[in-house]
Image 1: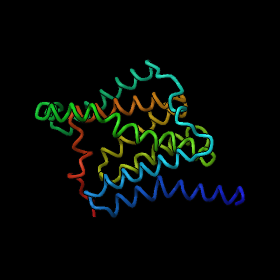
Image 2: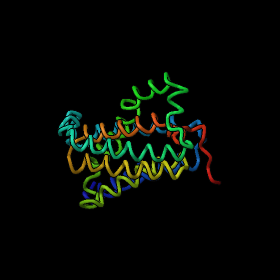
Image 3: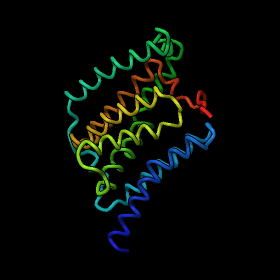
Image 4: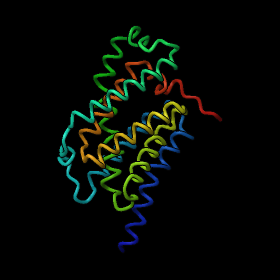
Length: 214
């Protein structure tokens, strides 16, 4: 296979995985099938990353977990999530925590491992490593990453989710692409997700609430 043919195959793989697959899940799958489909897609992403020439899993441990950007991100995110939660819950951002403390504790414990980690493997490590030859230069690659990250959450059919995941995607992509730290991106993602659920915005990420606008 020629270099140009390999490039076209890689380009088709990129758009199929990061655009067509999430659109298909959002548009056609029933809510009960969304998470199984996401798990399957994540498994496929792990295989693609593992087979990427030159990739080593230990490379994800490179880069520093800088306290200053993490603390700054945490402070801004907490203020933003609290404001959105105050609006969405009618001024009761801690109602979910009060009603379901055990469930919340389980979510806070498992979210970094079961949600943030696989998403960061797929949307940061796979995206920027396997397909780096296809990506635009500079901040355009970060914008593209955030846009596709938000598109992957289209299945919730919520503008709140779309805005949160786009803005979060910008931060996570910056941490990975600019600070060259998978661990920083993962920590930021984990903190953001924990805040979202702790302050009652998990209702936007519950498939039982999904209602397609058509």
